[in-house]
Length: 455
Ligand code: LLP
Image (tube, rainbow, N blue to C red):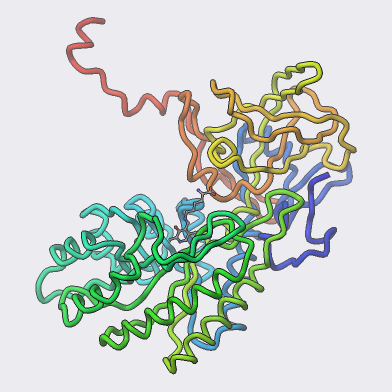
């Protein structure tokens, strides 16, 4: 049984990233699985499968955990911002805005979604190593902070801002020499990264930007990686960033924002043990305070930009089990009606997930099965060799922790339509994204005139 609700485990209730299932997970009198006060097999029936399901209380709890922990542990001002690449929709943006968080966006699409969701331009930060002129201009017109990643960004900001107009508010991103792709990390002088200025370039950028009328350098930024369980790399980051802050202020830049990026990991499987949001914020805040005080600087506004740890645990995906294939002595395959198009993480990163049957979550597992997707690709496997109770075609399978980088990385491979997404709160289910239909996928196809004639 893979469900670990806060009630059963005694795990930190306020840190959803340490849970396997959404915070509101429970079983009904018939021992069937419920989330947000709704019976999951009912939802599968009503909305169809595959179905992305979001538990609102889990997202709000994660937002409040970041916000409250920053207030408790950081004596200066602070702002958590949501890295919307993890899961972007207008409704989610509304929730994030209503919790007072800002937003990190990386494209015109994410930016428009944030604005439409009611996030204020001043609380939005536009990232990207190759922003288009249109994206930069859209950001400028909406008073969005632009994170400068390279000189090309600067050239175009200078071109876009009319003379005499308000300067663009910019934040400088640099690579801090802390590499953290797995649960190990290394510190190097130079990072092989496409993002941000190299540390060696920072000084000359500070110099070049002195006194320019078209930009105001108000922040510095560094991000060291994602799905990180260690705390030490973030402590080291604070030191590197404090040196950069000191340098920038010595050049006269009004740098107030100190953005340490995101990266806190989440629990996908039983053995994952990430730090809580509170612990992460505490360690980061203390490290920043120490590094800043050592250099006798005023405390900057501390910004962090979590994506995964804000939304992953709130999401589950419901599938219907279909065909079954047993290869004696080798493996049992159970196929579902989705797969790598709605969750590309297993095939892309060999990521592991946890699952159970919606109507038999407490039943003792009695077979080892491999959950295969329906795409024409042998590697389209969602979960490899997991224990499940006996199941039959038509049963609903629940895959946990799919709220981050599933919907946002989904594709139409094999011309399979994207699932619907719903959001649950107190027994109510609401549609968040409509299900695509196969016909929708033909919408942008054009038949050139000369091919029409052939027909
Ligand atoms: N800030 C920046 C500049 C980032 O590049 C990222 C993630 C974040 C914040 C948020 O990081 P998080 O808190 O979510 O770890 N597709 C991959 C993850 C890619 C993360 C990219 N950057 C996955 O599915 O695991």
